[in-house]
Image: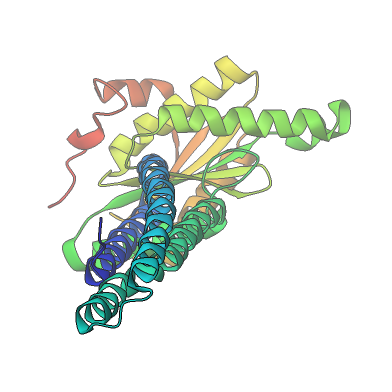
Length: 312
């Protein structure tokens, strides 16, 4: 079996292109979508594992082939000993010319294998740099990038979105009374619940301390009010915790800084009003989202917030 060096070059270029596309796609989706990014990461890891298996088998095949090449060269040299005619000399030179490219093949395969491992490590580091290790949701860096991406979509295509800031009530008491380990368990439980409740296109992140944020693409204030009230109820009923939530939408606040500030002010109002409530901020100020109010807006399921009359 003879290997064409140009074929290996093509293989290397193909691998580079595939990984470049995968990493690029992952980087874009990671900053914009929480659960979708996790799925892309799993797919990327599966691709890497497959290529690692291919590279390992290819490396083994090359080693076996290299042994055959060496044996063949030795036989040619042995057969040519004592023969001075031009045919044997030409045959030896020709064999050397044909077989020479294969001698460097094992080294090139090894380098390709190392490149795959480097890409694997890069993807893992990329994932870890955007995920909060304790809660499993996005971290502040991921949220900031997602917010910037959706701001650009709003400016270019008019894609509206809403933002909720969630703060666990009296969280310091948990740490003071039961210890920080219990507090960490509570944060992890909240992160898990928020991931389960959110849509695949929503961005869930830990904003800092006991605060979380949910960015809801193509969701206007009415739909976001329903969802946030459900989140509040679920936290209270399933985790034996309470949370105050502040909400705002790009309907009323076009600039990113104004949107975050409006949601934060709504959260402050929820805290001041007694906690365990959802307050929404719009052009008329901050107002309480009542359970009865949210029930009036019929939304069949959490994944059906598209009926929020998102502008196109």
